[in-house]
Image (cartoon, rainbow, N blue to C red; front, side, top):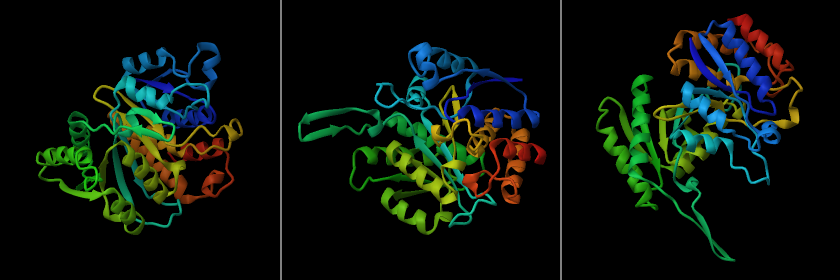
Length: 331
């Protein structure tokens, strides 16, 4: 039995969390939940959206499943996601993007994994106002971070029977920063002779992704490019409603959907829990409950492919509860 921190979030978070938890329980997963609330709903009681108890719970349990959490606008609070990544050194953002039968898209045979460096680049937030007409942001790329994200990408390739890793950069312009990132990827690639290593400029990649996305396997990118390209790839396979994600470090891992908390449909039983379910499937694989993960995956994919019980964003009229019940039936 594994204890996992569960963060239900806010907005539609509690509804899709219940869906995922019910499915995981029905599938027979060996999990006990340590429920920790975070987000706008806890600010009034505890003064901030990410209380220290949440961090401590994840440090104790090592693994968390997290629903969307709203970042308050105009109240000075930093993003909960950014705080979690920094506090737990979750240096690798993992975003698998794969076509699913039943989800209509413009493309077929897309099966891309984006591995995004999560801790530095322009997202380090080192900015200053030089004068009233000029602002400056500093791009930080380090050897340590670049080596470990490249190692993560190649290691993931080996564990998941992947064939190719593309290192993505703009090293023709950013010769020192992106050049360092590329040199580190090249160094790590030498340790994995059975994985094909390629390089591509980020602008060329974006063009090729909308022309021939099936050509790509694993992409490893610095933070900013990874953020943009991962959403692009989500669009190739159906959008953020089916976009799973994970933030993984040496000691801890947080699995979560990519989409927001959608407060406009909160409590209306309309939300699509697919992205959180996919994130939970990835979590189960991570904690070596692969058989249960694959069981849920088959049931989810059967539900989507059959198409007779889908939420509104997927073209149906089913409620969150009905969609969840259909997946459980298909287990």
